Length: 356
Ligand code: NAD
Ligand code: TYD
Image (cartoon, rainbow, N blue to C red; front, side):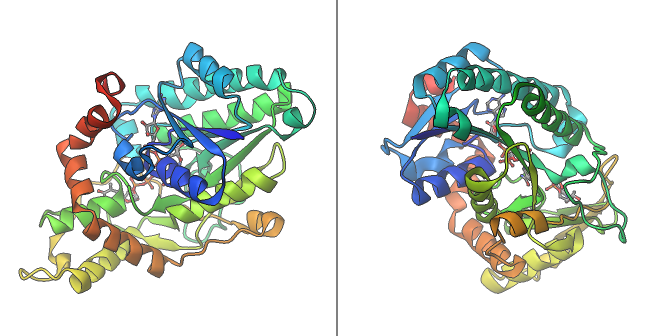
């Protein structure tokens, strides 16, 4: 059996692929366009592994998606590919509309094409698993209840609006065409292979380089944080047992202000790699706020626990310690990301054509 993963060279996708291959004996076909966020070095440990088939390609390319599905006939599609960074969506929303909306539409149509050729058990058990975000729900006040699956969508950034649009398309393809879909809306992930443009890896990498730690606004914005391998296990659980047409919120039960996060990272670095110049906290710098900055996200993850028995394995304390240690142990990975060398790595390992 085979599953197709889109965006499997990105942060969450690559963690999912590594987890999947360790937990099951199925093959993974990994369709990824290798944008700036795609890094095959994350999957270096799979070199030569016949159960990982990498296809460089764009989910907006219908002919390529059709050909990939026809060749591999996956029993499920797990759709991670997206433009994912809110700040980039503010500066350049176009790519977000293209990949997150048009790309999801293209993939849904191609999946519907494959699914319509299936019969019996194969047709009934086929799944289109859409990986989405809690940001579609909008922003909470400090006293609002956490997001449940019944909460209406109120996206505020170009990123979250494009993801909300994709969630609506997935829902419609189920209701109109019967495509067997499941959607997961997850909170902020952190862990290994996180591109250092997002809060946690940026703070670790900047601190180690003695650079400023830029806090947007007053630093009191709240996010719920989930260790990325826990997200992978949640997706496995929903793919295996989630009810068709349902959405499941995935969260870590870890609401933290940005300041708490940055103080925790500084304290861990002070312990694990003390800087003779003094505590890393000296680098904390307040900067201009992000336009339209959502104040608080919080996830009510009781449905996935009740129906599927899933709960995160990591607490924030254990997950953040592992994460900081991972960055300390992988200075080469960080250096390659910062220098752009990870793109040469693709050419070296997959040939010039793959890197083009
Ligand atoms: P990422 O930006 O690290 O990776 C995205 C991957 O998609 C990259 O490998 C990139 O090359 C690929 N990609 C982009 N455009 C493509 C296209 N047109 N065709 C094919 N591949 C393309 O993202 P991530 O943080 O790993 O997020 C993965 C998914 O999870 C996204 O759908 C995101 O919305 C969702 N999500 C992320 C978080 C988070 O905290 N990072 C939280 C909840 C949900
Ligand atoms: P981010 O990691 O970009 O995720 P998202 O915006 O999708 O939640 O940001 C997490 C929080 O950290 C968010 O409130 C913005 C804030 N932030 C900073 O204060 N400084 C930074 O340099 C970055 C990247 C984010």
